[in-house]
Image (cartoon, rainbow, N blue to C red; front, side, top):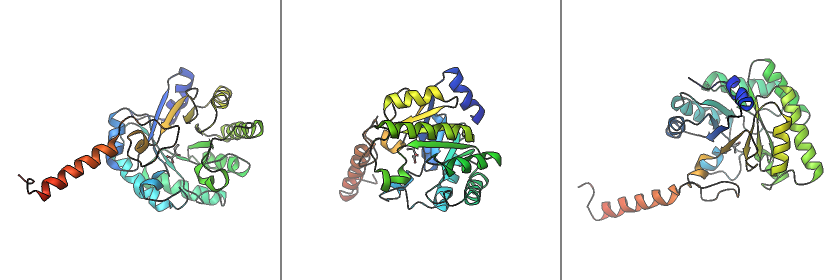
Length: 257
Ligand code: KIV
């Protein structure tokens, strides 16, 4: 049975930990689904795969193109798609238009937006009102890289308080879960205890209701990983050595045999 938004919310009450990972293509999506991942996120971290330095250049059309491929591979997991930079911050109308396109064109069940301060909570409330499920994202928000850098957030009392308030505002606005990225363990615990919706951590300790990682980091495909990522296998080396072996066999006329 496909995972639903209601189930994800309920899992927090049941104490069932949520497993989330990113996918940007059909094959990865199929693998995540086969492994029983609960939430597949078409994250704008896809920028890395497209060779960009930050997530900022990704367009809505690019996200939709890849999300359609992911949709074809995901049968069970809940599918969430990131709204890219400046496709939801300009106005509530812009956010409805972008999120509406994602749901209509890709078949995803929800969108994710970054930040929760002031007008963002209003935007989220409006999206939820028109029937678009939203996942929040606070702490380190990569779309604000030029303001925040990529360092841990919530280290000072003021900043921690601000992140907590953002999370609470997003819950009030109706998000069904919130990603907490790269914040201290005690803050993640505090937010997780305070909210009745699930928190999904990335570099935010074991105290969250679920965890998410960028799949290419977990698989060791990326050249660099963030400090909080765990590399479960080094596919980069495996792939390079397989390609080197193929190259040698071609040059030595051993392949095809
Ligand atoms: O873009 C992304 O992959 C994300 C995750 C890191 C949560 O937002």
